[in-house]
Length: 263
Image (cartoon, rainbow, N blue to C red; front, side, top):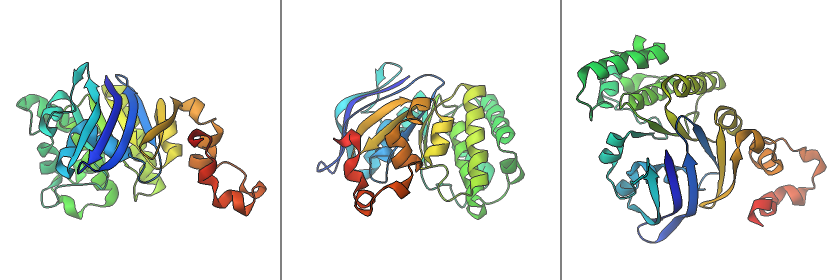
């Protein structure tokens, strides 16, 4: 469904962020991007959704295909109409609007009123807590409620692909489990594809079918998530499963330099 081919991104025509990355997302699949802060994960999502243009960023080489059509030069509103919606990091709700007004804002590109009403009830089905708060001002909702709201707002656009950036950020483990469980149900029941950026590698690898590890704007490792969970580098640098007691202080201090994928 989605294919990034040798994509490079610059900000302000100077700052080199993505360095020839190749990523694929199949129809109905969940793919995750792993990587430290600054690796280029959020930039990748913005390159797909067209939001780079709002930050003086640009795809300077390679191309992005959605259902075989190139989209890297399209404006964000055109990309939304194609069925790609991004849930940005930081729970960007429209704070002075009610919960339901936020949800309806997600359907602004649609003219099928019956479909919008149906999808609104679908969002309330997945997020019962949001239905209880439908008349509340969204800025006063908790962090978990706002995260549910922005995912629900994305669903109101009737997407085929949802780009989700750090959904667990600042949330309790209990809320994180709930939100990840709902995303899994949405994929299964609605056949919506998901490209997930997530610092919690345990949750991301358990939810996704396929994963990519990013370092310094490059894809350094990829594979089915069941293989990645058994990869020694993923275990050590993302899952924290290596017995650190067997390592010297020098090895721990300089562990980043020893990543086999950077050799």
